[in-house]
Image (cartoon, rainbow, N blue to C red; front, top):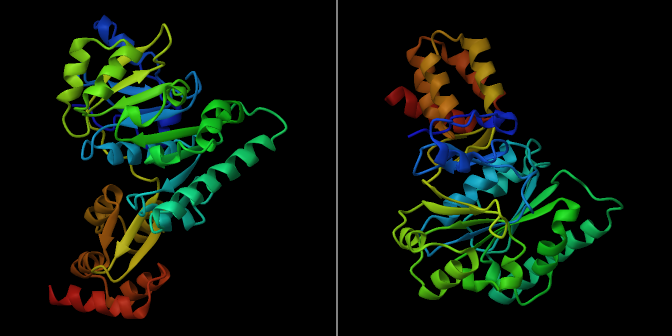
Length: 354
């Protein structure tokens, strides 16, 4: 199966030639620009979402608990950030997106990501705060003097059913496209949202569900076949049925395999047994290692840093020590990374004892 066929930083400019030998697969490649959503289960071809050509930028993810909604939401968020499609504002109602707290605070990601934590509040304050946050975005939208063609902002919102009692979500779904604002909504059942909401969403991800009420509504609203409904009930964790432009004559229904979570570009964390978590620019770290210690002796370490999100400080020290570099040079290098003496000494002790 094809995975990560395109480097993440090149997603916005990718062009794929449709496989003319497989005419049925061409329907799955109607859009060949934009963000990579996953791989078609039937043809194993990459499926993209070109937000510039979508009827509107809004997306809905539905599925039972444990079906893979959070994984898919994370994948879409990171693809949007990596492709620089728009700034993503995360409304964290559950605590499942807390990993973005430190990332969004960094200078490197501040323009691309905003994290709003509501999960530690009681239910009433959680809803009030989230509605206030949506209201602020509406005010910002309406202060614009002209319509923006390019998407400027995406709101990632889990447990959207908690906010349907207020008008804010409805307003953004109706008016957001004009102002370059999109919403990614995640909810357990499609019946959590009224048809008035659903009617303004052009991209729908259906993960496994067994609710007959939801299945009947999806079959009626999107003209899904008995085969499609049966497939939805049997989807594996992370698999989804993708419906693009559901009310259009160019509507497509595609079964997607579970996507790998995309990685935030140029970010890596150096940890020290859970006592420390230093975020660094991946490219700068690689350049620093190569310039100080040389590429030849550190090729294995460089390969690990290229492919990982995190790496233990003690492991870095072990590799450098075993390569014959002196402790003074290594310590000086560690200090340049912004790591304190106490953490460096602790990691050195562990590395030497290995």
